Length: 442
Image (cartoon, rainbow, N blue to C red; front, side, top):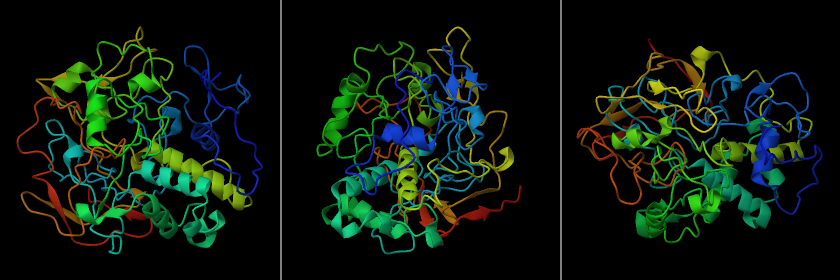
């Protein structure tokens, strides 16, 4: 078995342009086949086929933490946006700062134990025509736009087979096509500084991504509806986990898919360090939206180029060795006890009202492969140029947007020197248009 709600795999032959895309949960399971487990969630390596008839894959069906994303799948992680070569990530290189490899650009001296790195700026542009194109586009927005374009037959995007050109971009959607599709559904708003509005992934207008399992309930859900009046219905706890009691040790209302302990929330721990949903029938079922986008790419590319593009993601030797993978530096963690292992997961260690970052593994300043925004300078107190400005949206899904209890409550104490208002960035050169290796003097 994998988990009770495991969905059947798609057939390996696909009709040309079916009426609508298959369910996204099914697409992800197909592109990232999971391994067999027993009733204690222990991996079973012997069988070639699991009890539900699906193949014994290389990814974990129970995903609880971002800590091992980008590492060997045997550690229960999944590929990062950098690994799937998501073109509109605009990630920060691994210079030893918190949130490295994410859309947030913090200075190297950022205090990772006293400030939330998600307050650092993301790439925001005034138009789509400069060297940095649209800036950071949350992956759930690309997933929602591509899904709508395919299902609705967006005429201006052309037949979906034209979204690909193997010689230029292998089995991934062409960036120009993806940007056109995104803007067809999420245009820039000239009445709001020409910024596009990106609804949250757990909203109707944001794609109703079913594997988000947002940590919102009651007042926090109502507050999110108020701040997103055009987003449509929201998939809060009462919708995705009805009648399920949230463990009393967890803080409700983070507005992200993370579930931090009350002790972590009291000191303002960055939510990325906290586990995904660990309780109820949805335990371990969270999947990053960029995996959904990647799974759609895999499905469509395989449909039109089956001789070149497989029906699973990446048949190469992923990932690179541990020294050069795209894992992020995590804080010191309190390991969950054996007794609670089936209903809980590790939480950040709190010491003297702070979390302890980094852990013994260090800052992870390293050489790695990926598509990065390089040569950025973070300048305290200045406004940014028109090619890169601070984004403080909380609608970016996991990995983007600021942390905070969205019912209006504050997280715990944060250093007065932190926050997006003091950490703006000035772009000094353009993003590379191809994958690059960032070489560091370590």
